[in-house]
Image 1 (tube, one colour):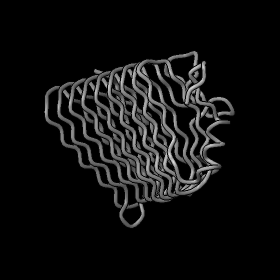
Image 2: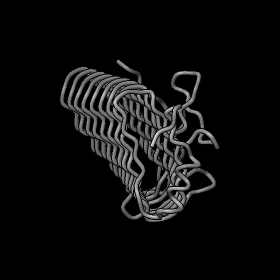
Image 3: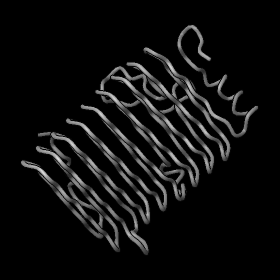
Image 4: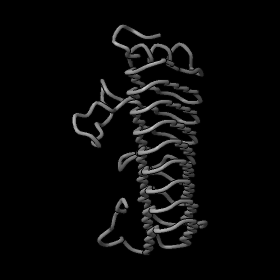
Length: 259
């Protein structure tokens, strides 16, 4: 359902959630801009979002400045609160934007972006909500000049990112014990900034990167007391790779520079 302003409102979605505890929410459109605002509260829900076309958005995206993300708010959010929820988002087209804010345990987030110059941001937890146990994140991007930003606070987090294309940017900050991050990129001129922090725990921090292409810039920084594992494989020419590990806070953290 879509109103005249092409906005699926939070109030309407809240009614859907209350009346159907386990269900799905979706919007499909041939062209943009279409805007979806979500506030999902509860457990064991399934949320499915599909947007087809350009300049569509999901939550938290009304910013006047390019590259600046507005926080989730009463009129501007994509918020999922609860446990054992499944969120599947698909955006197909160019210049789409999505921001998601999740709290809870055993949640599964899957995001697929196909197109160019798309931006996606995912926040799980913060300084006031640090539990967020056993969440699984899967992000797939096919296209060029896309941006992924992920900030996670929790425990036993598994994050998998697959990118096929050129000039994409990935920024990931994983504050988690027993965190696992896997990134596969096929393409050139991509930029990666990956950071894992917190006590490593029994199985530690585990980072695996497989990069195929030229002129990629990769920075990996890991901070923790035990069992830090970094496995980076690159195939191509003129790539730059920086790896920093420390049992204490990393001083003067660096960022990747696009090549």
